[in-house]
Length: 281
Image 1: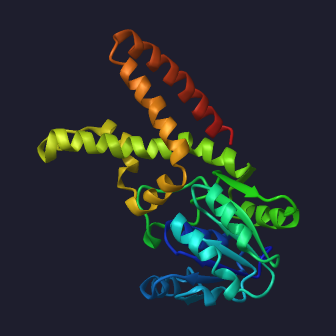
Image 2 (image 1 turned 180 degrees about the vertical axis):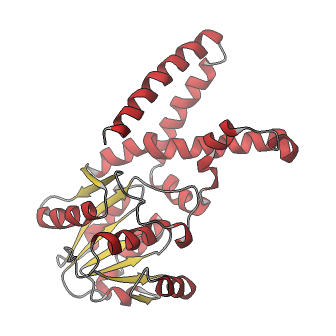
Image 3 (image 1 turned 30 degrees about the horizontal axis):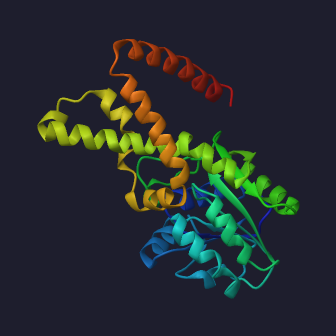
């Protein structure tokens, strides 16, 4: 099937980049996919049929209609202003980073021929890497776009493409996005990692051998790679800090048995709403 883009270059062929490639194969079968990454990753992508072509630097993006920046956030920000040296034709540029303000500000360096629309698929896994990529990773999940004013045609093209990957597009400002995901995404990751750290340090290997499913389920995110989250924290610190403070206040109150009951009741109510939203998505 023909898609809105003839040639898509994906810079960073890990979990998200690889899953975009696999989902593109499924939804837009005639789209030519270019993998930009290390030689070993490119070799795997080509041998598995996940990509049609590969390159180690941005020169591989030269003929792309769509460039997807799927490296860690700080790397994407650096690459964004390097793109005009290599992509000299009209193209749409997007990213998949978990924060949007810094990269949107950086996109002002782009010439008019390169239209940037920030993006963030709210999908992932407990482990990263191309081997964890799946074609159905984005199915029925939200994909937030933060388009700039005057980019209506680019917004429509990218929306059409993302819908073909199975995701549901939502539009937000970069500021609203970064504030919301501090609670919806960043705080859950921080809590899971902090909890696993505390439990592991206090109980040790012998203690963890006694753990049941509750700890495993609660700490599923604790395997996430630290380098990605360092970039997220660095580019959304002003929102993540207050989110942590809000959680600390609740935990302190829960030293009281009355507060435990109240918090459990509130949590159960919000959990029902969360589950019902998922069921009707």
